[in-house]
Length: 376
Image (cartoon, rainbow, N blue to C red; front, side):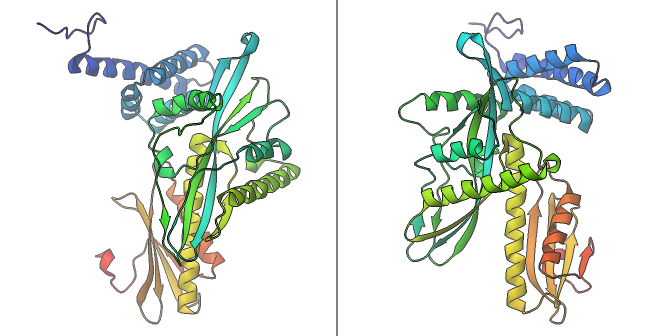
C-alpha cells in the first residue's frame, strides 16, 4: 500500500507534507503581521485575515504553526504583533448568547502571594477554595466591574509552573472549559494535575498562586481591568479595598489550625499579563525577604556592598551582597530572566529593594576587587 504523501488535502499528512503545511501557513502569518507593522492604521483587511488565521490554528491545535511564525519573525515588531494578536484571540473571545446576542469572554487571573508557616507537623496544602462566590462578588462590590458583567472564578489555586507553559491552543480552550465546568454540578480540575506542596514544620515559605476566572459581558461594556497608571485616585482606593477583601477571604478559606497564612493579592489582569506581573512581584518579594535577612544577620546595612552583575551569555542577572570588612559573600541571588523581562526594569527593582533595606553602596556590572568562586 502506497501512502499519500502529497499536500493536496486528499490523504493523511505524512511528516514531509506536515512540514510543508507548517512552513506555508507560518509564512502567511509573518507576511500579514509584517504588513500590519508597516501600516498599522490602514490595514483592517490584513488585521482581520491575521486574526482569522490565528483563531483557525488555535481551534485546530496547530501550535506548531504559531511557534514557527514567531521563529520566522524578521524583527521584534513583527514578533510582538503576532504574540499580541494570539493573546487577543485567547483572552478576549466572543460567543453567541440568548437571542444570538454576542457575549465577550474575558480570560483573566489574580496573582496571590502566600506566606505559609507550619507550626508543628508537616502540613499538606489543599489548593482548592470551597466557596468562590464571595470572591467573585467582591469584583462588583468594589467597582472592578459594572452591574451587568458576570464574574466566574475557578476554585483551584494554580502555580506559575502549571499555567505559564500551557500551549496557546490549550489556553484558547480555557474559557469554554470554565463555562462548561460552571454548568456542571461537580466542577473538575481544568488540567487534572497539580503541584503539591508539603510544608516542613518551623519554616516559612513564600509561594505564588493564581486564581483563573472569566468575565462575561456585552461588547458595549467597558474593559473590566483599568491600567493602574491611568486610574483616578478614587478608583485606586477601590482597587486597594478590593485587594484587601480578596486576600482576607482567601486566608479564611485556606485556614488550618496548624498553619499560619498571610495572603497578598495583586490586581486582576488578562491571563498573560497576570502571569508576568505575578512572577515579577514574586521575585521582588523573595529578594526583599532575603536582603532583610542578610541585613539582620550582619547587624547593619552600612556594612554591606551590593554588586549587580548584568547578563552576558546567560539569561540571568545576579545580585551579590558582600561584607565590606570581612570581604566575604553574604548573599548570592540569581534572577533568572523570563523572555518578557526587561533587564533595566529588573535592575531598578533590585536597586529599590536594596535602598529600602538601607544599602546604598551599589555597583552595577562590576565584579568585586577580590575573587569569588562563582565569578571565575
